[in-house]
Figure 1 (cartoon, rainbow, N blue to C red):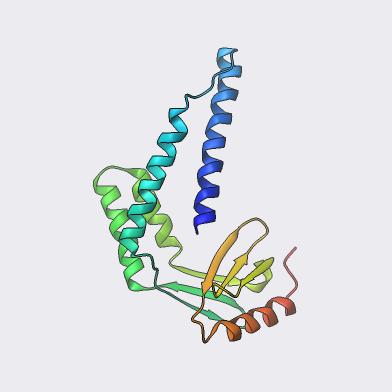
Figure 2 (spheres, rainbow, N blue to C red; figure 1 turned 90 degrees about the vertical axis):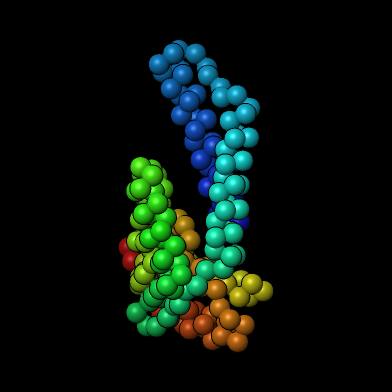
Length: 168
């Protein structure tokens, strides 16, 4: 999760710099660079949001998943579903489309069913007891397993993933 957070932060900042530079060259015919304070503000805001999310979620997220011959099915538990609805409602009441949209996006991911044909790669992290399910360009889902179930879940995922050719 920390790597994903860092990657999104860096890509967002880099994209913002590229857009400003290109816009300056196209519209102003000069090179425009953002001041050094911009990355500091971005890092500060995102770090604050990360800390807030960690406090609200208590450094855990309740979820259940099932692995079978059809694919992997994921369900968020009631606490996470409730939090998503609160975020969407607060965003709507405050007139913040970004916050409301974040809540709505999280609500749309409360139940996922990933079929084996759409899963391109599976990465196993036995020391953390995590199995990362990926499509062609990103991690779609991470299965966090209890210690006593990790080996069985990993074997089941290996079996079904190896037996299914990826979709074209």
